[in-house]
Image (cartoon, rainbow, N blue to C red; front, top):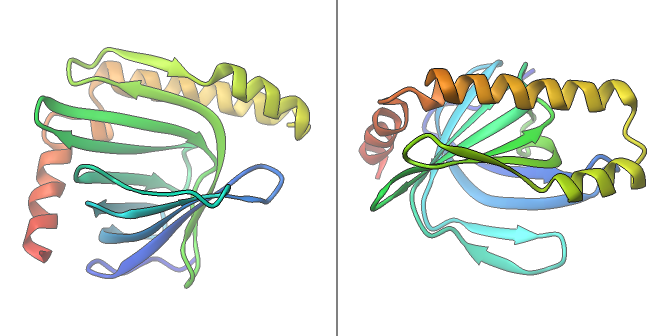
Length: 175
């Protein structure tokens, strides 16, 4: 698998299990790009929804994608701290067009004090039935929710105290 080069700008494309495009982030600056990990940053980025609506992100964000984990993590820098939005998703793939993943609806929102909540369980159950998620996939996704929660509790990976701040400082050197 190819890897995006640090300093390059890429698109991020989120799909649903049935192959339909779900959401597209117009531009993200790659801060780290390997075959297994991509760390990117964006601010005031145009986002397109599958229903044709669009919006612009409100704050700087550091995005973490891994080719082995079934989640991705977005750390949003706000005035009152770092908020994390974690998508339970397929591991990412990257081609020359974009970084791509399948969004599986379940999300974990993490607050600056590291409390968290699991979101969209009803949407997950609806899509699991509608798109016939295999039982093994359901197990993989729920195991990864547990793995992600362990990372939050143990302050690992993007939840470690300086992760987002250090990558944001690197992002500022490109601006």
